[in-house]
Image 1 (spheres, rainbow, N blue to C red):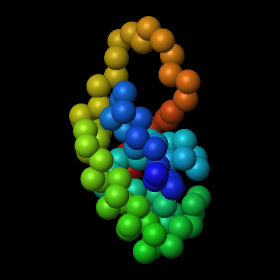
Image 2 (cartoon, rainbow, N blue to C red):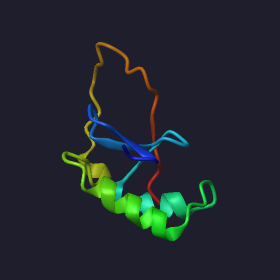
Image 3 (tube, rainbow, N blue to C red):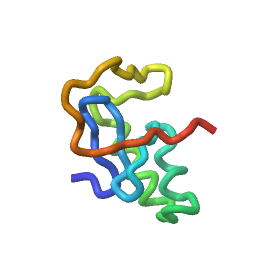
Length: 84
């Protein structure tokens, strides 16, 4: 079980368990080591490598497909971290 992220399979996103933001795989290390979480670099690198190995995980914002209509709401709200 991943300590910091969960896989929102329906949308193919990695969701930070601590803050609830969707994080692009290439930004996981900086997300964890940043001001909000302050996780050590070694742990952040290890976590990033683990999450990046998940199957069917969107790698880039251009791959995200937002549905026009959702029949049943997800039981978990999520947000997508803005591109910087």
